Length: 413
Ligand SMILES: C[S@@+](CC[C@H](N)C(=O)[O-])C[C@H]1O[C@@H](n2cnc3c(N)ncnc32)[C@H](O)[C@@H]1O
Image (spheres, rainbow, N blue to C red):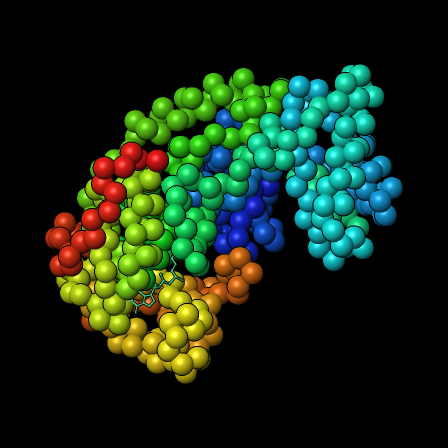
């Protein structure tokens, strides 16, 4: 893959433009936004750079072809027309992940099975032996997407999706995906040079992603990628990645700004504390029990307050009316002079109840939930525009009682 090949990086809907910007910075060429992802051209070196460094992409796919396919036979014929023997050999394990959209078929498992049969038969016919399926940890992951009667087949360079950074050791009920949290931070122009507070931090995803940005740490530094095990490219990919990882480690920097998470739920804080430790950011991120409707004083030098409040009535506070009153109180509490605010809300009542005029908004999807990301200029700080607000670098300690990780003596995971 010395020449540039066409690749497709997937992302949460509504974040495609943010991913396109990121890919440009990472050296990708001929970038074109599409629904649910971004098409681009890259050499192997550049593609690996994307796998290691993209904070927003979910998967990096190498498209092999798109075919019209009707019925079970059509699926098999389409899949069998690809020269799989160029990508797998009998010693390679593989798995097929299938997704459907508006298709005559109703079971993705059936589509995956037809594609799997075609791959096995094609390789057995070509080389006299077949590769085995391993759904848990395959060397090669084939991605099949059937949209109406168009079957698209790709190889996934990453294997495990890129949001699996390896630090989420304790989830909470409604965590943000790591890649979506990174997209929110990019939308808010967070570069790691200003203080950041998440007053409803849950399992700590926004804080940890902010910590990785502030540290200039590659999000994929602690994981490997499927392409390292591909029969053809694996050896070269491992060599290139060894260099990219070494460079990434050398170029990390110290975090010079405070990063604070509050939550009123001790269990969420315990999860956040474990995740922060697993991300090796215990020094950089401070956690404390607190009520977002009664925010403790924050440094006057300002910063970014970013959060995703509860969308529904988990608070047990009286249905939608209770949520509106909660959002109203947040509007009173969170508008700290000098601090710009970004909120991802999945409850349409949020915006009016928060009673402030957003200066930025975008629609995006948190899994199946349609959400709105709202940006607010700093109040009383005089800045005219969020993106141009001065980056208030502050080393002042935040005035809150920190939560110590309860398992300080545990090994980092
Ligand atoms: C949608 S979750 C945040 C998820 C988080 N972004 C993550 O990735 O895990 C909302 C969080 O708000 C917290 N919360 C609800 N009301 C709160 C309040 N008044 N003060 C502080 N935290 C609150 C909940 O305990 C929950 O952890």
